[in-house]
Image (cartoon, rainbow over all chains, first blue to last red; front, side, top):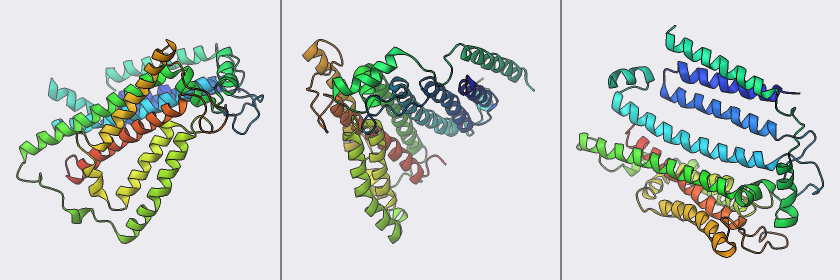
Length: 114
Length: 251
């Protein structure tokens, strides 16, 4: 497998940034941000993976067995929660923008301000 | 194609190339070999008597990170609620005569099937949420996951036609807001308890127990606090959005 999982993470980040830059709709833009964030999950979880490792929960596996890193899993949990709440905040801002400017196109909103 | 896009694409190309280059310096996939992760995984069982290393790591070893995460959650939800409520009051001034009236109960009545299904699902889902929260230190689950499930129980309540209830729990100093604040404050208070009892922020000051539910010291309390906060936060956002939808505020 080598470095392929890391390349998937890099590719996801690139695709997400492309979507953010070319986006013509704020809702689409927020979804693209979540794609960028998905790359961090892939990176974190693949960094902590051990060949043949089991989940680091010893309720039903012996405490001597090989397990994957629980620290990156805890970090991914943090990541997911932050993403969900920041997405809610951003979408509330989109609703606000729609009310104020009448549309959700980033370009035309900028023009109105200028 | 506008110059802005071209500059952006060049930047993305450079970024992805740099990330790929950096990846070549990482240990090969599946060959993770870091002491910290190994210790965090192994240590949870003998020293904390909990079996879920991920939760023990989140709430005990790395409790400070989780506190920061929890406050991001709290601040974001406050932001959402402030934005949506302000917008509503602004809208009301503009067309005060038109649509600011109370919502007709008739509009929100669900079909009999929906009501039965919703009512039947609320109890089991709430019990599942409680199970996931209080078994956090033993099996997969914990405060964040259980809180989300608990919010699902409330969603079934709304699906069952009790939409008016979703609106009644909304608003400032509603039970939901109080539950969310108690959860957020309680988690911080547990951290300060460690400071008082052991001189270290997030010191795990309760007995670690032998086996079963009352293990891992303060971790079960942390899970309950976080579960309350997450369920409250999600419910607040949902009920605010729900209200927008019902009043036709933001179509």
